[in-house]
Length: 205
Image (cartoon, rainbow, N blue to C red; front, top):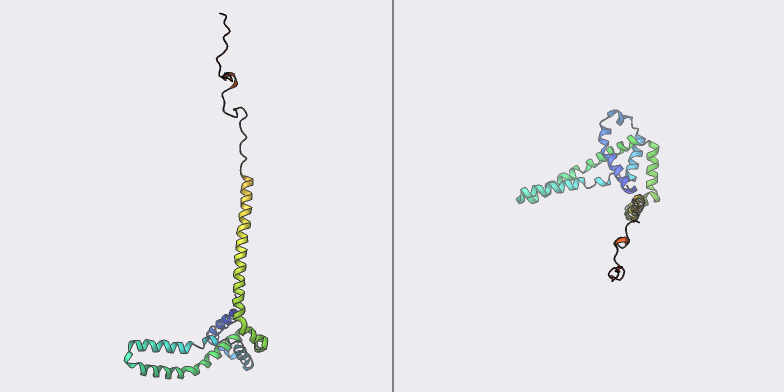
């Protein structure tokens, strides 16, 4: 997996696991204010919750479309009401930020969180986040080319080796039978005269 996706995926996983962290009052009470502050800074530096920005707008849009489909004559009222209620829920985004901070605080020490925030707030860290997708695309292309080449060479080398082994293990062809005439001619003692002439008559007239 690629670095940029790893950071974002890990961020989402930790944010989702915050529910478990909050379900343990003992843990929430054990987190110091400075530890929580460091976690918030780290979350902000790596944009851990950015992927959740569209949750409320998408939910509002889906609800509005669903209600209008069922009640097309109330489109204006539905749109106004959904927008108003969605804006009223927007402040609850702070709850998600707190849960994300607690999730990170559960995994990382205060010093580690400070180090994370420091790096990703630096020019190099910001460039890593911003350029990560482009680097990932190039890496995927290079990996595809490498994979194709390795698979091709592996198949070729294995095929050549197996073919050579099969050839070496094949039984040798039997030698020709020396007793049989090479041209399938009749045995010499019964052969006809070379010129096909009649046998000489040894009788005296």
